[in-house]
Amino acid sequence: MSNLTPDPTRVIIVDRDPRVRRALRALIEAAPGFSVARDTPSLADVEALDGRQRPSVILLDLMAPNPRDGLALLAHLAGEGTHPIVAMSTRSGLRDAALQAGARGFLDKGETPDRILAALKRAAII
Image (cartoon, rainbow, N blue to C red; front, side):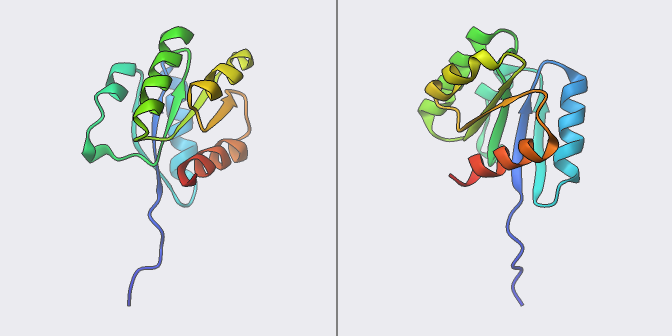
């Protein structure tokens, strides 16, 4: 009998705050159909992704370490087209810039758990 369970939505979390990373990891790992492939504070870690880490989606804090760097990385990764990205920030004014740079979604950091998971799932299947 074949296994009909779909592969989980694998998420890489990029946020400079370890408390935020822990909270997001706990939320994602507790949700059915999701797993965390990695969490990191470093944009360099995301730039160095290799084939073994195959995320379904990257959850990227645009403020890590500053919005200009976060938006530049977002545009670079989106331009490669290899990993869908959901951008997040405490600054909702970055929404339009993030979407123009190629994010498949944008979250304010205060979003509800249901909205976070829905945004990740939606970005992973587009």
